[in-house]
Image (cartoon, rainbow, N blue to C red; front, side, top):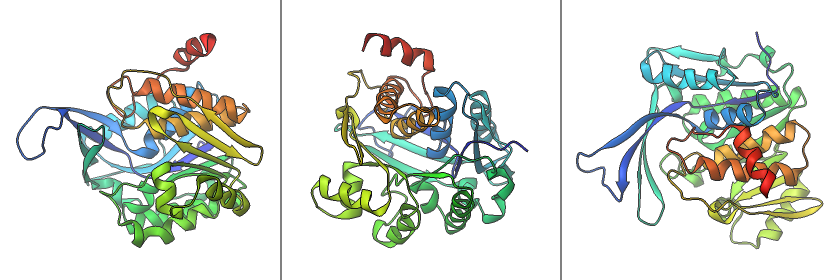
Length: 313
């Protein structure tokens, strides 16, 4: 059994996109896809690609034995991610349908399928023996009660193995009633050392307080690095040493789906390679920006593309 340095648990699925802007789900139309997707899958692929496989990676998940499952697994394996702990089942692979609105927002319809059947028995303690970072996304703890229990078990094992816990709430109104699930978020947040979030999520989680007050409280609670992702406005990184502002690249956006998970994966890849957090943020921002210029949530650039931009910036 391989024993990865960075492990994530949760859903892998395919994404199918309605072509055009403001095209309704209420009538037939043209769709693009299927594309490999799922927040944990996007994240872990980004870690592997941006580290150029120098950081070993693995995912614990469930998918169907169908072609959608084969599609996602092939992409993960091609990117260097260990999939030996992905259970294959007769239940169909999960799927997400997305359409884009004129204001840049998106509407999702989720069919969890096999993704919702992750269970505590899927978590094998020996898989965590060399772990350095355990990453969890909110979508994985909200998707089903059994997935939450599995992720909670994985969290406990990771903490016992002295892993750094990285957490992205990834709150989607299509998947979760926020008020009913705040306790689930807190289960993971209290162990978190690296926290990825957005301005909208920060206010949902902590109320309408000034950002600096929220950040100060998080740092006091034990979080060491807070990354607030701001889309085309870049990102802000906070630590006990202060605030670092990271700009985004000015690009023509084709498909922003998966950019946040790509950012987190690229950041963790650089962090594991010992880079300063400002460099982690810069590379993560470039990676996420380039991802937005191509179709598909897991369309993550290769590191050589990042290097070219770093040479002129």
